Length: 336
Length: 274
Ligand SMILES: Nc1ncnc2c1ncn2[C@@H]1O[C@H](COP(=O)(O)OP(=O)(O)OP(=O)(O)O)[C@@H](O)[C@H]1O
Ligand SMILES: [Mg+2]
Image 1 (cartoon, rainbow over the protein chains, first blue to last red):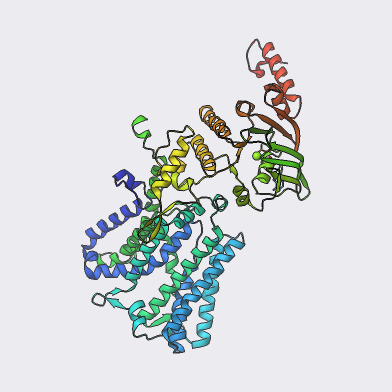
Image 2: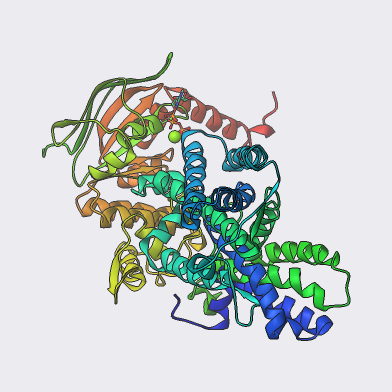
């Protein structure tokens, strides 16, 4: 991305804070928990958490860069899980049918979110708060109506199991980790190397100017909402296949966890600034705190305190780094 | 005189029951600066919004090169070569100079099977374009726009408009937020744009700034054109009076002078005791 790799240039990048945060967290858990979290079993535990979260956090972060917020992902995870479980578990239809349906619902809700945001002047936080509750209601209502239960079993074999919901490396690492790495690489290209990334940053910087510059802001907004809700449905679907069952609840933690990862990752809450690599680091940082606590002598309840402090420090640090980036000018250095 | 690039004939604009513009007639030619003057609320920005496609006139004809035009949105006005630069440059503070310069028209190159954003080309082009307007302090296309001074941002926005083939450049109070030195930079850039054959519409409250670059002046008072004259036809005092909407300004000046005389050269009217 950048040709210069001096420490100064490094600090002016959006992911600078995320990188330092990750280092700090690693040192903290290295001291209090030993290096367990860097040994295979420890690594697998935080990588599994990071991968499921990361697949959702990146599109949520892209929306934030574009100046929007999507909290309906919290309902899309159980929706995706329940769709595949009801269709292929309860009704026993082919698994590919359930997978296609789960992803289609993701696309559909994303279209609804995106369309409502561009057609009304309602902030996307409120729009997606509405779909969050609506979708939760639909999932609970329909599941109980169809299956008379809030938990549905699903057994999958063959290719679908291997691709979407299996473990590898001695049965510890979820395939989601591979998905996460591949998807992250694709986003890095899309956001930082293709021209479309520039459009997302421009939209978050100044939507009216972006539209006047010829950027199809409405289509991009819809696309980003489709990406986030489909990603959430995808994660839910994979979890159902992995654990052989789906529950109607249990996606809400993704809302805050994704936003924390994104903000720790250096994305500006008001849009226009951030990076995929930053979100990637932010997600790993969150996952290490979330899982690393098990390898220390602390009670696991303390992990929330650490995450809260981490979030505040990260925001302050990111503000400082952004100011540095803004005031940076190669000429001024020697002169003034 | 060459044909006008852009002309307004008998333009009226009302927002519901509020009439904002009455019977506006204006023309701009290539290589000419039209200064639009007027007090707060006179309707200057509304004229600009009609020209840049934000609003449509209620009645009247807008023409480019003699042919009637109508803009459904700002994009259409831009496609006709009308570029508007707002007070703060209208750019993206957290984007780099190169990226914001090319926003919406990013140059790409092939790297193997991938079409990628050509950062080097974008940065080099942007830096060269601003420098050609005399702003040599911008020499790194990776700098963020928000780190530039107000005048540099204006320069970047103007250079961008010119680079992408604007024929009419509209500047809404570009010098309002700037210090003396920065403002003179912007005025120099306006002259450079004029020299390159653009038609410039320049809105300002500062008569001195208008007189430094203007070829043609129009004064708006409460939505109507109160005066339309060319360079050299009126003095600074006359223009100031017109902008203030009549003779009050000359009266005020005379009053201040008499205060000063009474106060024995002290410029403070407060010293004068009745
Ligand atoms: N969308 C609108 N709806 C109703 N009235 C409007 C609208 N836009 C402008 N006006 C009115 O039109 C008048 C002219 O406004 P305009 O912004 O064009 O003035 P201006 O000459 O640019 O003033 P300033 O020097 O303060 O920028 C004002 O009285 C304003 O209230
Ligand atoms: Mg105005």
